[in-house]
Image (cartoon, rainbow, N blue to C red):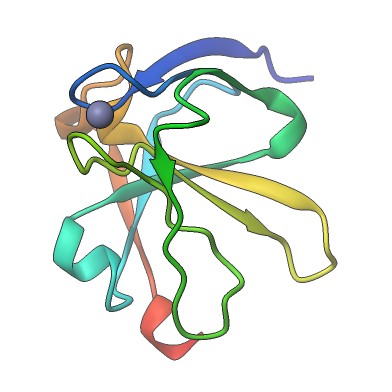
Length: 120
Ligand SMILES: [Zn+2]
């Protein structure tokens, strides 16, 4: 079993903060959908059960588009999307972390893979 690490993420102003358990994050996904292409989000996926929102539930604004599968939540004060709520095709809840918002991750050291979100 892979060892789990605890990561700490937050938006820019700090209203939204969370803890996430994940296998060590050494890669991330760059998505070309109309949302991520504009934001430059780099994603790493974990099950929703490994995600704990510490603060900011009332600071999040939800934004949905296309098939409304993903909840592109962002902080209503600073506008930062520090994570995305979604589900796998078989219906399990998952979280896409924006690894750019994690304290313990240096995005410049990650292997980046491409995700063709535009075609989903
Ligand atoms: Zn904020």
